[in-house]
Every structure is written in C-alpha cells, then in structure tokens.
Picture 1 (tube, rainbow, N blue to C red):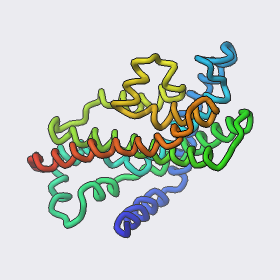
Picture 2: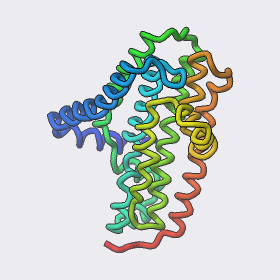
Picture 3: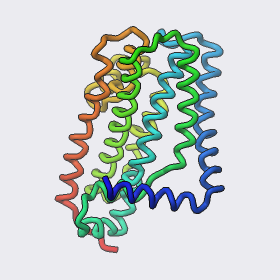
Picture 4: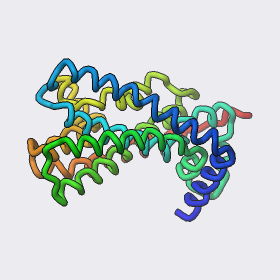
Length: 257
C-alpha cells in the first residue's frame, strides 16, 4: 500500500501541474454525463414510471451506478490503456521489476478528472434520497456502501479482464466497451426492465444486478433482507478476472519496442 500511495501522489501532482486544464476537464466530465440525466428527466416528463420504478427511484439507481463506474475509472484506468504497454513492449519493463504487475499497471494511470462525474452522481443520488420515501436505517446506509464497494470491484474486474485478453489479442477489443461504458449507460435503469434473460445474465455471468437491482429493491423495501449482502458477493467476480490475468502473464511473449 505504501508504494501504491506513492503512485497516487505522483499521479495527483502531475495533474495539478495544470490546474486550469484539470478543472475544465472535470467540468466537461460533469456536463458529458449531465446530458444522460436530461434524457432520463424528459422521458419521465412523459411516463410516470418504468416497470414500477418512479423517477426518484431511477435517480437513486443511476446515481449509484455512475459513482461505481467513475470510482473504478479513477483507480483502474491503467488497465484500459494496457494495450499500449503490450504493443510498445513496455510490459517487459514491468515484468523485470520486483513488484506486483497489477500494482504497477494500476499506478501507471489514474483519472482524477472523473471527479466531475462523481460530483454529478452525488447530486443525483442526494436529490433522489431527498424526494424519495425511503426510511433510511443503518442497514440501508451500509447497503449503499456495499453497493459502491461491490460496483467498484465489478467494473475494475472488467477493466482487468479487458487487459488480460490483450495478452492473447495484442490489442484492445473495442467490443468489450459494451460491458464497461455500455453498462454505465444501460445501468441508469434497474436491470429488471430489460427482461428476465438479461436479468439472469447480469446475475450469474457478469454480476451487474448484484451491485444494482437487488440491493436497490432492498432499499425500496421490495426485496429480501439478504439482498443487501449481494454486492459483497459480487466482489468474487474479481477471482476469474485475476485468474485470466495470471494465465496471460504466464503466456506473455514480448512484442519488442
């Protein structure tokens, strides 16, 4: 953790060298996702509810999902740029260092400008809490924390999976954005509205529903009590992602420089 903290400070200092650029980029990130919020707002001007979920409840869902994804982008963005390291042969340098490869890749890039998205997500979630009829208790507050931790783990796992596949393809698979950026987009609504098959896929294959739909139903007093623990179970998704990464490292062949 000491080494990771040093990486963190180095990345933060580099961003702060150009403070105006950093602030403007944060503002840009805020307004890029703000247009998605406007789409949700105008749709609910016409329809009162979607599959039983009201505007306020969708805001809670969207706010949490956006926070989960943005947190993962801040700390796991290095995996998203991993194909460059493979193509340029720079992963060789990482391999010969006496430190964990994942730690070095994580420290290679941190997107602090995603704070603009997180700020918007906090505003949406706070407004959703204010206008909703949820009776907040300690277990529900804890559930929100579990959702953020589990969501960050799932999206970080997807970034890790994307990087692991680069060992075999030597380049990033753009179709994989369906599971990362795409998940952020369709995650603004509860997963159940997309149908039973999609809900099953997002429960047992890529556990989006464990960090979004099921704990959300618990917050809204529509789900079972143990749904609040499902975001922690979603963290297990990191295990197969890590296993594929280790497999890729063992089979890694340098591309040169």
